[in-house]
Image 1 (tube, rainbow, N blue to C red):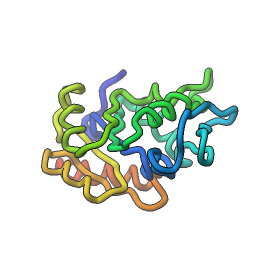
Image 2 (cartoon, rainbow, N blue to C red; image 1 turned 90 degrees about the horizontal axis):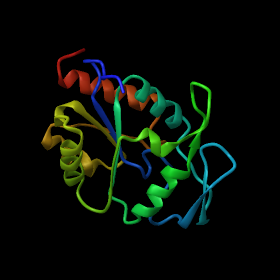
Image 3 (cartoon, helix red, strand yellow; image 1 turned 45 degrees about the vertical axis):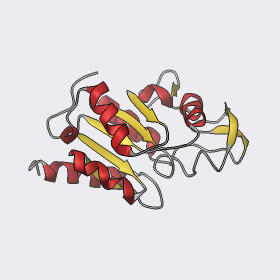
Length: 180
């Protein structure tokens, strides 16, 4: 992967539940989670089919093409369901060609119960990036605690991550570094 431009974070991290998709994976569905014949959709044994919020597939692919590494950091009590959903969500390749698994867009995944501080400590160790080079999107304000490490935190609204939210987070990251 090419290196991220100096004016963009090196690592963008997303929570999953109510940040990339519209549910709590540990309470609204049960497994196994199977692929669907539709793009951006998986089918749980119990619960409604689900997928990423509308803007997310294009956003993730664009970030990757810009040289930005992507991670998931989720405190779910059902990590197997989250991993299965990422594996089985198939997305249209924005460059044409074969469909892609959502899982292939994530360089790192930290999906288990506990404080997001622990998730970010592991992400820093695995990626080698400084906390200041990370931008985190999450729908829960309590996870702003990662800013004590130096991570930039962007709260996600009730409609999930969309393009305006992404741009707002990037703008905040740049401002914290004196780049805009």
